[in-house]
Length: 105
Image (cartoon, rainbow, N blue to C red; front, top):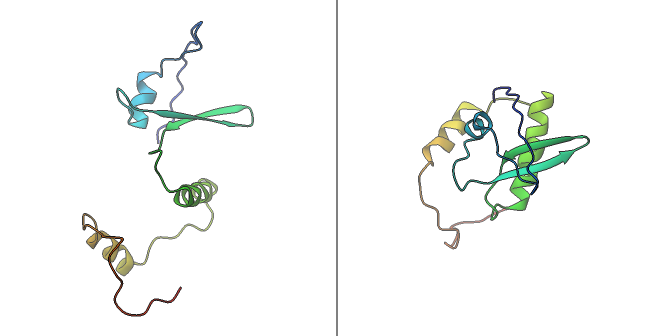
């Protein structure tokens, strides 16, 4: 993500217009949503995720993002795993379908 510094003016009604450069960088268009997170004395603005997102996945992605930002525990996927994942892109999955064989959890 490019570093962009932009300033917005708060209206008397407490409204802001998100600067165009920020909207473009976040990929937010008309009707899109942004989230505001207060972190210490900073406000971080991000594109709002789908409200129906799985909270466990959101928490995992947050941990992953923190590791990436800190440069910790980051490795590339093994090539065979990456290729297997790419091969599944676009395939429909029925989560209610019975599983064949044994499953160990």
